[in-house]
Image 1 (cartoon, helix red, strand yellow):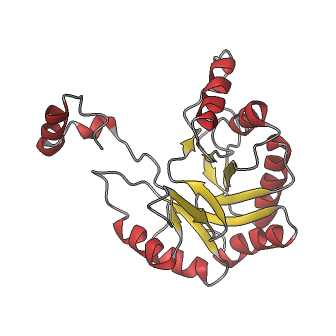
Image 2 (spheres, helix red, strand yellow; image 1 turned 30 degrees about the vertical axis):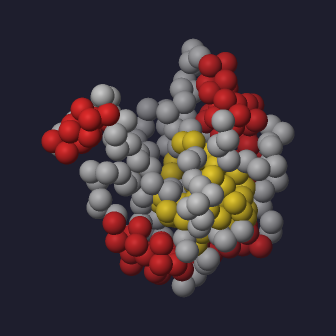
Amino acid sequence: MTAASGTFRIGGEIGVRRLGFGAMRLPTEDGAPREASIAVIRRAVELGVTLIDTAFMYGWGANEELLAEALYPYPDDVLIATKVAVEQSAPGEEAQINGRPEFLRGQVEQALRRLRTERIELLQMHRLDPKVPLADQLGVLRELQNDGKTGHIGLSEVTVDELAEARRIVDVASVQNRYNLLDREHESVLDACSDAGIAFLPWRPVHPAASTETAEIAAVAAELDATAAPVP
């Protein structure tokens, strides 16, 4: 990682800028302002964003399709990262973790079609499935990697022990855990990633609701003549 340049390398290979774009909040339901969402995505890239994060769970595939509509053919310096291992049995039903190898393979094939690409450069396990041996879950991702359908493998919401176990099976390029100024639950995971040269991608890095809860943040905001929300 290179702090001076504001970039880091996914898997030690793919250079991206440190400030990425999480696409989860883009509306994808019927009647949503699709053109406005496409404009936001394109503007993010115009402003220099080179890492865009999505997932099947974000709109159950619709978010991936939206990114493809906005950016395909993709600029050479833009990395699209997506996630698998979560399903919805029926519309309106609660999401379920599914780490069965055949399911993961099918999700990757579908993501390739939705994203209009032959290779997903960063494929992340949205969650690990406690009902399926980790070697089976990550083993199929390694097979897809060997087939050239995925580049690097990432994890999400894992512990230090889970990260260590996963690294005995595959090369882990990234970890995406919740982390922000007030939520430091995964500080040990961040440290483990830093020690191993693994990219740590914090989700919800800014938490406006929580940012008003501490006197320290309020004091900084007052000094800057700003609201508390952007301080973290």
